Length: 493
Image 1 (cartoon, rainbow, N blue to C red):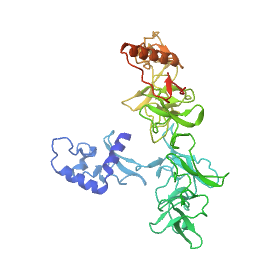
Image 2 (image 1 turned 135 degrees about the vertical axis):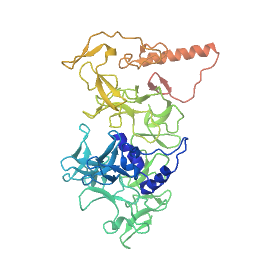
Image 3 (image 1 turned 120 degrees about the horizontal axis):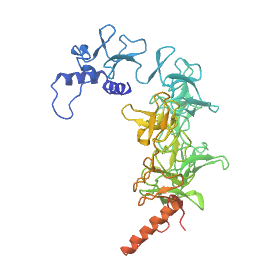
Image 4 (image 1 turned 45 degrees about the vertical axis):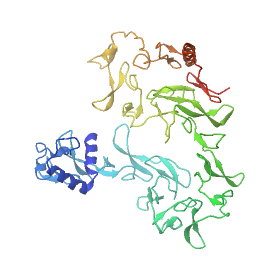
């Protein structure tokens, strides 16, 4: 069902102009070469006799009549006629971005209030897959809850809205929405582009000016003067929006210091400043460091950063909490129901995070909305194995005969009937099924044995030293750089 809906969205994305172009292409003889137009699935006359009249028509099984596809046709109100490729016939579905509410049998746009009570929005229940009314989260005074991302944003700020719009409240449904009104947002309205901007931000203004409302002239304008104490930078004589870079070095934020009563440049939380440039970079991100290196806290000055070698192998991420590397997709140090994955960051980051989401398709268990490591018990009953069925595109619990287990037909239990002897780990592949090292240990890629990270680092160092002596070469060292032993970062001496 989901795959067919995705294909239909692709055919529909071009609108009627795209439909006309496709009709011309279908009428012309298709060349027998790569790049030729592929007809949509409902053009098959054996499945859809109406396609002989027009490819935009589909046959409705209930009455045998032809109806235009992607319109309401014989469907209930708020639904549209689509083609179900799995069933090979026309069907009724909600349009893209809409959810079917069971009690009312109507389609409502996702994340909107729809038929829900005040301060609720329509969401998909992870366990059942049905549309449910979910209560909004609690926000501080002066802020609104935005259901699509579950975050709080300040009223009349840009927040999650597009350029030229501000976050406000719908007078009809009393739900948060993005918009711009000359009458209701006079202090934020810019008549030259018919747009709205948050006050004391740059908005539509040139660099060095801020957008604000002039109470004397009763209009918005771009200006800057020393009286704007929170935005005025004395060193440059210009004004900048708070929370942005402004006149600061890379990675800094232009903020107001309530103690000194003047603006200043400051590193954001979880960022480190490089002493030589004053630039700030997120901890454990690549930043200005070369490939395979990241910015780590300097031990003697935790707020300063230094470039160090990444101790993790490909497919692993670093966790500062235990100073070890953990495999992506494994449970690692995460709580049950969460797995190791990349942290949310636009650049290159080598630090791992714990979490679970529906797009973790191969590890997501819809019954409880959590994620589990493959080839483990996970959420399954005793002796069952948690796996991903590539054909059905979903996870499942399997009683695996290869592990010496059989499923009892009467009780439905998975019984261990043959003791599975542990196999030796193949060299360099210690993470395969049945060859996983205990927590705190790592497999040596040469021997496959499980050793401590410090011992593994010592083995690597001795091998490098031996190779260096055999080839009479000098070990490569970099002055002032940090070194890595095993999976722990050690500061330079």
